[in-house]
Image 1: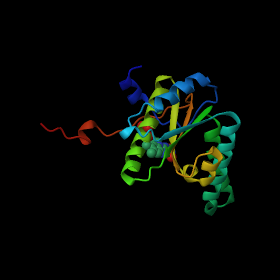
Image 2: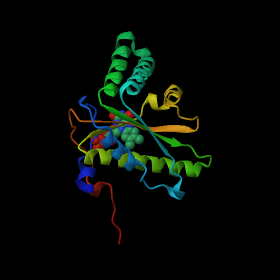
Image 3: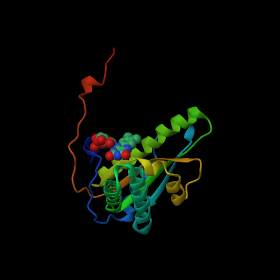
Image 4: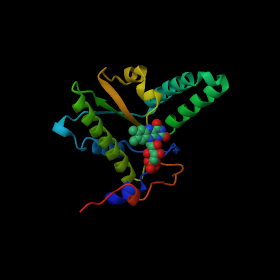
Length: 187
Ligand SMILES: Cc1cc2nc3c(=O)[nH]c(=O)nc-3n(C[C@H](O)[C@H](O)[C@H](O)COP(=O)(O)O)c2cc1C
């Protein structure tokens, strides 16, 4: 698959099949992350790769955090949302938590965020090229100090994305404005 095809066919996948994916494939995909551009070679990223018990424990934490966040909707609805959040995360065989080491200097921090976003995109495109679906999630889990503690991330790390990887159950239809609506060409 060439890079244009990977860019065009990558979709944010919400529903995965539980089928296993070999660790060697995931290693190739995560390795693509560290080749992202980064100003002054700060290499501000860290990749925490989870499967099995660790993934199940993170999914359990996600269930609790989402249930608590939705407590104002009543017990039944908040439990339903928590259970959905758990199911979403437990089904794909691999999860990659991509975090940013926060620089002291605000300008470096801003550029480092862009670099880490590029690393996430590398991972999503590599997954597409490997025939896998991927999902870039944020939400309350990524801002939770408990999640950081569980993952063993230091205080000065922010979670930029939680990437789910696995075979897609359903591929959504893409939607984008035409190029003419988002560009101006000057000569
Ligand atoms: C920084 C960032 C955070 C995102 N967080 C979420 C998220 O929490 N939940 C979600 O469903 N999608 C999330 N997405 C994915 C977008 O929703 C998705 O890219 C968009 O719907 C377009 O769909 P496509 O990627 O299939 O073209 C995120 C994307 C980015 C760049």
